Image (cartoon, rainbow, N blue to C red; front, top):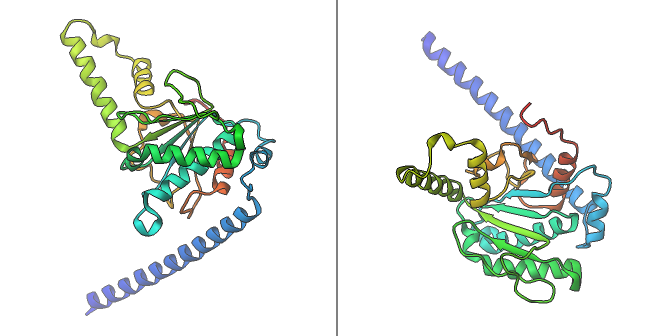
Length: 272
């Protein structure tokens, strides 16, 4: 009898705690989403680079390389078209503040199959923001062919040419494949007597990871509801500043701007 009473009381307490916590998270989420939407209205840039540059004019520093994590979209959420639209917006914001490299991480690698439509969308969106003086850009993906990129005059940008904005499409498999390929190459060299295991160093691995996947981002923005890196290549974010806004569920200029402000105030201790 006593055991039954104990289990009943215990279950009741857990139910009460769960209800209170669910109510708290619901109120918190509603509050944060409402505040974010109001801020988005107040901070709207009107697709004008001058307005965006004005928003960051007082920042002491800006990232040279920004990485973002995007959520996969179902058909009800717009699918790959929505992802491409988000990439186009992010490209314009980065170009407006002078970011040289934008890395877009999408876990499944869906975007890699749509480099040409993505290129077209980014080109058109840049034209909307910048007019005929839109910046040059290039879209690349590790372990897949590169898509051509068009500068303002419409000519093709070759791989060796410099561009204003480098856009990388990265997926979960890229980090794993690069490590496997690198390990296999070292093994082959060692078996052929052309490489000594003592020559393996952090600098050597770092150089290879940057060359085969991407360089190390200065800032990683999570456009996701919770802090979850989703398999983002770990080697590239050892010293990266990571930004996440609680309860945020999509790409918005306000979140991008808040991330830049947070980065500007961050103190880089470089492992100390």
